Image 1 (cartoon, rainbow, N blue to C red):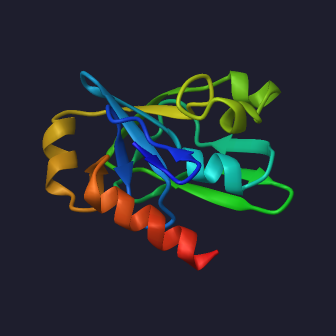
Image 2 (image 1 turned 180 degrees about the vertical axis):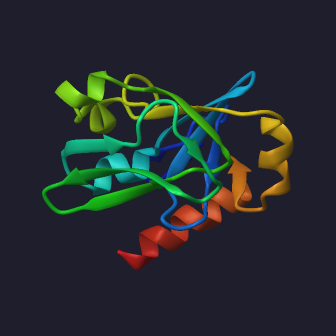
Length: 144
């Protein structure tokens, strides 16, 4: 799905809850998380990423990290409860991967938990690409 100059792959989920702009990819009992194309283009060059340690148990909506540019500090909230099992180590040396490849090498962390799909489908603010995502992104664009 493309909205103006922003791209949102159809195979991912998107968190609309503020601070928003988080994408989710389900890999069995693991949830891979990153920031969407809107943020990768609007934030400016990402200069630093901070994530909680591997092994840390997190609650739904808990802040698990931040990403920073010269003009932006963004929060990353856990979309579901679970345990952080992996952080993208490439980001410590090259945080701008979030800008250049937000859905690929710019992913941020992975959380392990059970019943991921059920948890996602119970949350009205986590959506696949489609009308709700488009409405949210167009609203964000109007706020600029």
